[in-house]
Image (cartoon, rainbow, N blue to C red):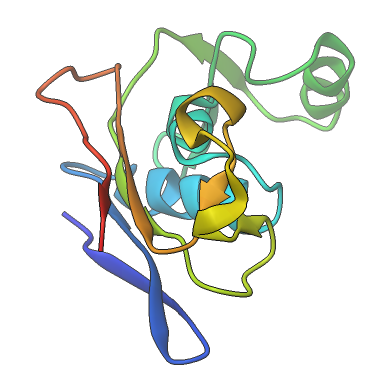
Length: 142
């Protein structure tokens, strides 16, 4: 497991992790970057296709839709052994709607985040990985 806390301005912004094996760090990092750098909603970040380079054996594993055909061709041409796999691993995530954070709407904005997909101030948002359906995530108002 890799319990990971991400802070913003000394406040908890996101809690995430992944169970089991050599892909923990890859899964956790890609999920965090999906939220932070790509602006994905929590469930979208968890559900996104993954790619992983395994040192031994020296192979790059990717999920369906995880690598475009042109990127696959470029990487293969550079000598990487590309291996398509069925979806693997799992990530779990809780995102905190912090006041003033990018993409966070004030709680009194009237937006229904379940419909709009917007993160609202003061709410916790959970995301459960469908690759390993072990439960569900429910958001709540703090």
